[in-house]
Length: 484
Image (cartoon, rainbow, N blue to C red; front, side, top):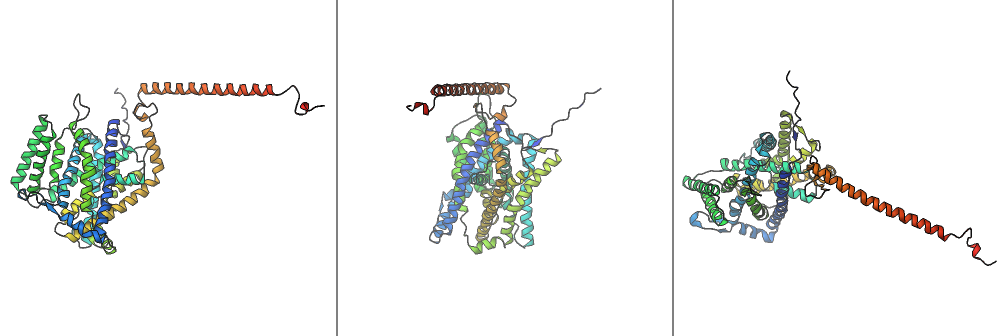
């Protein structure tokens, strides 16, 4: 007779992260949060600079200032250098993040990867569909269908930092993984749909450069003085090939090894990401925002955002399409894989995070510039729509997250509690006998201390009582002290 089959426990959606994954996510989000605050400040500075009458002309002048070696096809404006040059650093970090997720993170397990991948795909498809339908119904251009598809993780984290919500690590990791997958598909969209011409000689040179980059990595060659000049050559060739230059950054990031070998504390990819991420989050992306977010904000311009089909499609795509797509993709994945949501969370939490993902800034602005290149007026209007939609999404997410913030704070405190002070949160040590022995010894020491304090207090009370009895004369009161 066959042994009875033991039913397996249902897989949990958005459950507690493993300790290594939690540590990595915490470090990554810490840097991105700082970068997000700088990004927010840069965007505000750009809007102020571009809308003060005495300074507006200087904003345009600086943005269009050209420099670079013209003989190499790199005589670019400041704004162009920010979009094609500095954002290559951002996409380089995105490539490393994606590689790490694929080989060492949650995406290495197909079952675990299904949720963020499907959620991200739905979170891109639905906004694109919303934009397309809005534009078609309003007889507008459909060229900007990809603008509302991107999530800006840094800006979203800056909002979290500003509103002070204690979002649990599982939801933060979900948001980060969504953004990583989002960036991957945004890169593919840029490479496939926004490459108008191809210079095969330059493209071939870029491919050869990438091959040399890969071989040097495999041979274990070290030294920034080798890789930085090579990376610049690859970037320049990719730019001149007609393929967007940021693709070079992604390709090099994907080539780095992101698994640690014996004797290594961190893989080369993690080490380089740790070094480059502050440069990306703290300098490259804020400078791009400074020269991309400066659009004229007037009553008429804001009115046009809600009346012109292209801009209205962007706003609705970010505010409505993005959360509906991510929430729907998450729910469908859980439904058809027979997974259940973590006991600590509710579906309202998933929708709140999905609303936060409606903040599309850096990549949305970049795609807007590419989609409407040659039409400066519409480009600025689409940028205004991205800013407006992102602001509305941030406000909606803030309201939804604040409603549940007391619950989040309790979950966060449980995740952070470390009573035995060994540097590992207690929730990760519940199955470790050594942890329980340490806690038993700690509680015994506390109990002994409490017993000692209680004994001292009892002795003090007994001494006070004896002292009080000695002060009372045998039956005599105050009248007994008077003379007869």
